[in-house]
Structures are given as structure tokens and as C-alpha cells.
Amino acid sequence: MIDAVLFDLDGTLLDHEGAAGEAIVRLFPDVDEAWLVRRWYELTESAVDRYLAGELDFVAQRRVRIVTLARELGLGDWDDARADAWLAEYVALYKAAWRPFPEVRRVLDVLAGRGLRLGVITNGDAAQQRAKVEAIGLADVLPYVVASSEAGSAKPAAGIFRTACAGLGVPPDEAAYVGDRLVTDAQGAAAAGLAGVWLDRSGSAAPEDLTVPRITTLEALPRLLGSR
Image (cartoon, rainbow, N blue to C red; front, top):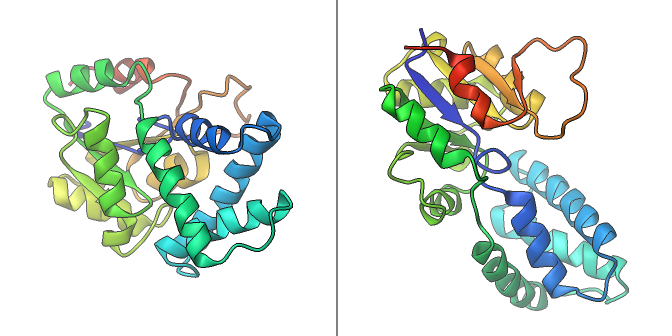
């Protein structure tokens, strides 16, 4: 029996890649768009991994992305002041592009209508992640947000999943967790005792050795969870 459903935020509820891509293209309109978006994604993933590992703080992980990209674009070595000025523009554009995936609100309303407790478990800075939930109009249905910057651990570690369950007052085996990353989200949640669900919007074939349920749209989640 599932009493609570928890969600990843970026890439699951909020179209983070779309927002980041829109922002970076506007700031470098003369650079090949496909390469730029792909490279910015790679730099972001690397920097965030270093932040979650404690190697960089939140500000430094942002700076290293643009300093590296600027160097690769032949723009020289940027100091902190120049990087921070650029980042202020980027963050403003990124925030303006925050949007939920189209089906998100409908699905959350269905689950809330069943009496399920809903929440978010997210890797990242708590203030920014809560601001995203608010900005995309989901704070009323997702008031409970656990972020790695406050939880003392980050996905896929079991601690953050168990902390979230404890906060909702449900044992892990009565909670489901849905995310767009197989290892970090679905398998990490399953290892912590939750029902991990992989949201794979890629449309590619599922791995043959998949050990968690896979859905290709959140619209499939209510049926997967069954009636309560």
C-alpha cells in the first residue's frame, strides 16, 4: 500500500534542460546551438557532481561552468567578478524559462485526490529548489521539499530518502519515488526501501536487466500505483 509519492524536481517536474538551454542560447546567439546546449549540459552535470561531493560550494560550481565555457569559446580566462556578472544574466533568463512539463499538474491533482501525501526530494540548494516549486505553481500540492543542502546527504544515498519519508510520517515501504535518472533516482530509492519508479522520457528501449518500473510519461503513474 502506497501512502506517499515523492518526486525528483529537475527533469521530472520542471523542464530544467529546456530552461537552461533557452538561457544559454540567448547569451551566446552566435555559437552553434546544438553544440552549445550539449556542452552546457555536460559542464553543469560535472559541476553539480562536484558540488554534491563537497568539492565545490554552490557559488563555485556555478562559476566553474562559465569560466570553462568561456575558455573553450576563446573568450579568455574570466575572473570571479566577470563570471558573477555573466551568471546574474544567466540566472535571470533561466528563472524566466522555468516551466513544468505539461502533464505534471494533472497527475499531481489526481494523486492528491486519492489522499496520497506528496513531496519532493531534490539534490541542490534548498532555497533555489523551493523557489522553483513556487515559480511553476506547484507549492500548494507539493508543500514538502527535502533538499540535499539541508538533508546532510544527496541522492542516491539512502539517507535523504529515509529523511524525507520520516518527515512525511510514512515508512519507506509505503512510499514511492519518481525520477528521471535511473541510478540516482529510481534505483537509489529502491535501495532505500521505497518503490522506485524511473521516468524515462527518452523513448529509447528499456534495459533488459531493469529492476524498477519504467514509465515514459507521468500520465502513466496513477495507473502504475493502482487504486488506494
